[in-house]
Image (tube, rainbow, N blue to C red; front, side):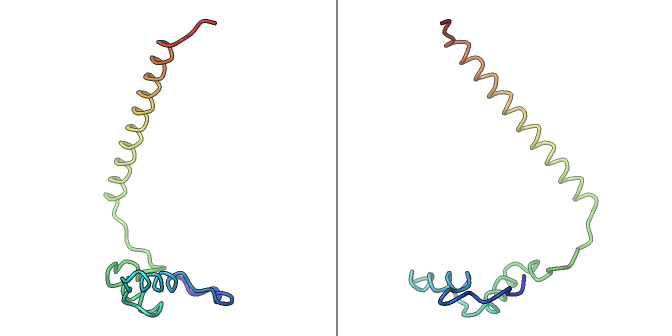
Length: 99
């Protein structure tokens, strides 16, 4: 979470305040009235957000799993692109017109 860079000019509001006001108009009022209250709600639901500027120890096994998942995703994308190309080529050959 970052600190405020500046205050909104004129009648402008911060993003969280706009969403809070909109929720009230829509009849589903959000349960916070300040940025601090919003952050407390977020931290309660997602505790890892409190650890800004902290680096957790990593595990080599997690990195290896991520790498394998990405390789598989990449292979799937290549296969899909190849199938689409072959389908396009068959379609083009079927409807080819010689001038």
